[in-house]
Amino acid sequence: MIASQHDFLIFIVEDNYVMKKMIIHGGRRLSGSVSIGGAKNSTVALIPAAILADTPVKFDMVPDILDVHNLMLILESMNVHSKFANGVLEVDPTEIVEAPMPSRAIKSLRASYYFMGALLGRFGRATVTFPGGDNIGPRPIDQHIKAFQALGASVVEDNGTVRITTGEDGLHGARIFLDVVSVGATINTILAAVKATGSTTIENAAKEPEIVDIATFLNNMGAHVRGAGTDVIRIEGVPALRATNVHTIIPDRIEAGTFLSLAAAAGDGIQINNIIPEHLESFTAKLIEMGVNLEMGEDKVYVGRSDDLKAIQVKTLPFPGFATDLQQPITPLLLRATGSSMIVDTIYPQRIKHISQLQKMGAQIRAERDMIVVDHTDHLNGAVVDAGEIRAGASLMIAALMADGTTEIENADNILRGYGSIVAKLTALGADVAIEDPVRVED
Ligand SMILES: CC(=O)N[C@H]1[C@@H](OP(=O)(O)OP(=O)(O)OC[C@H]2O[C@@H](n3ccc(=O)[nH]c3=O)[C@H](O)[C@@H]2O)O[C@H](CO)[C@@H](O)[C@@H]1O
Ligand SMILES: C=C(OP(=O)(O)O)C(=O)O
Image (cartoon, rainbow, N blue to C red; front, side):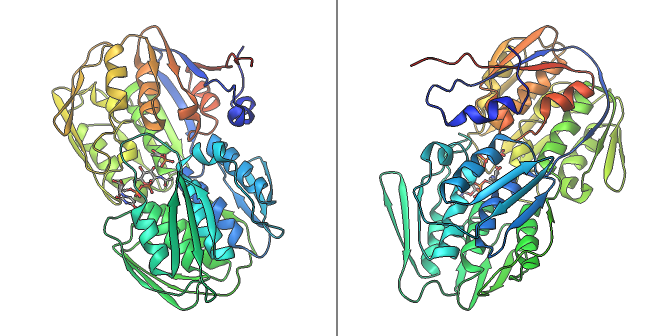
């Protein structure tokens, strides 16, 4: 049975849950236009940030992705009611209570770690199961913990659960130098510090646009966060946060990059709407170097049919460098280039789950020491493959659209964690794609 993207979202918390498959009949050239949704990595921080407010809050341009539905389940466990329809999410944290959180939902995504900073900011303590998210190599949270401790909290890790407490004085401002540039640690520190007593400085902060989005949301509620988007962020604690307007989430630069790669690899003229070109510069610069036919507009880009592509070298870096989350989605396009392309992922060197799966489809791609080498490949064939994580899934999805025959992508939930309305968007471009309803195992 074929289900709409929405139908399966409720099943994730059930024990007998079985992951879905994405079925793609490939080989069609795609054309038309697509509109990019709100950024996953902003949304998944904004939702936990909402519990810091003393009023209901409202977000617009919220993507309909699994992570959002799982965050809503976590909110409900704290008596925080939320309502999501037509891209608008309303969250009412005014009757929040401290309560155990559903560990299955917490484990289903990475960003559940933002409840550590947000609960700490709200109650001066937090107990949160260690987060899940994509399996892309080691993902420590030592810098988050270091920052909480600098702000005056005690942190104990016990059997996969992190317990954070403060003394009678609560949290106080501090100067924190992050040893590694971390998106999560930067945002978690902001969430904990925004209502702390006094001034906090975060040095060597991450500069991703999603961090600016969180700071904008908090500042519009009366917070005092300055310097977001640079590597020094200064925060003056305030006693209360009150929402007075709807916060519109920035467009998802990773979804946009995925569609850019897809359009260049399998398109016959595709317009991508609702983008912020400045957020994509390191990516579009590489496409231009390859010879992709791009026409940039103020908030859109047109990708013309692109032939005679050249091989490139890619190194992933923190923003504004080339995003690790776009390393896998660009791979199918590199298969079309003449010569050998090389990718070095400095953020997650073990992010290579797509390689063995693309090989099943006939791709000439291999891991060599700390590098991914992608050779020109004339022909891809459909196969049964596994979306080991979200961006490996995105890479397989694009390869499947290019391939002759049928591809079954197993564990497609990993794609649906972060690509809103993906079936509808691809279908509108002329793709033959469906999500297969899982066969559920009975107890
Ligand atoms: C929900 C979300 O926004 N996820 C994004 C976020 O993940 P996430 O916030 O988890 O990634 P970080 O920016 O924290 O990680 C960057 C690097 O720092 C290391 N590190 C991080 C924290 C820490 O305490 N100690 C430490 O050593 C990590 O192992 C990694 O090598 O940024 C990643 C890097 O752009 C993206 O791939 C993810 O899509
Ligand atoms: C790694 C990613 O997500 P997360 O941090 O939520 O696992 C991603 O979006 O590519």
